[in-house]
Length: 335
Image 1 (cartoon, rainbow, N blue to C red):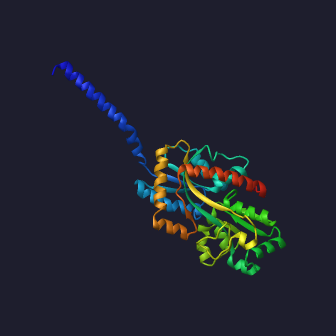
Image 2: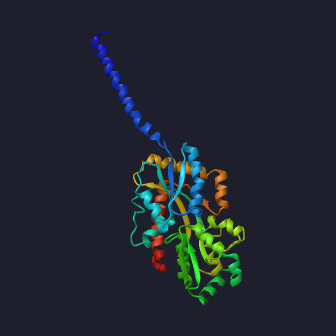
């Protein structure tokens, strides 16, 4: 082989190797995520349903990807503080949000101005679960007031306008709006007290400081089962398998069409690579399909989902329209 041919051969082989390397780069880059811990921002205080579901999913993702998925509670402004943090984070897959019907379905209609756009600033990943809310009172207080059911509550509220304190997990949350919808459909006047999440609100409910709450079922279920809180009704169209003996509000009070269910799902900042979004969705769906996780969620009153990013995006869009009407019809506003 001549020197010229040898040189040409080396150049050709070099070019082929370079091309092969360049073809491999995208797959190597994709496979590099995650190479450090991933943060899941929960926009409410610890102890509420958003927090419970995030902490149920995080260990499963940690095992699947070999990196820690860390829950970071950033409460405030009905979930807007935490949602805004994620909206303004780098779209690199290392900051996620456990969004809710409040942060992505209600708040745009309830607040005059949001620091983030719930549609443009996020890449939906998957809905984790849907849950009904539960209308509840402290057991001893309900007994002292002679309130055994929703009709008793309505009668008492109408005869004591402005004397009943209603706790919520924050302005604009589904818990708040469920109460506002109840007020508008019953003609009752309940004084709203927003907290920085269900956890602290439940402490005051159990302690007797607050009178009524329309909480997400998973966070209240332990206190209901312990007898500390009395469940008057669930806010969904059907009864919950976790509390089969508790009627719906429609059944209990004849409020036809009453429906105020909540949902919780993972979102990433807009612009996050689709392969990362899809990998997270696939692992969440897989874990939610396992018997252990599924049974645990159903026992807590949550219905696991795991839908695709496209399906979740369509659901968010529909929720915008639904809750905008509820806000307008109820006259709800941020205090």
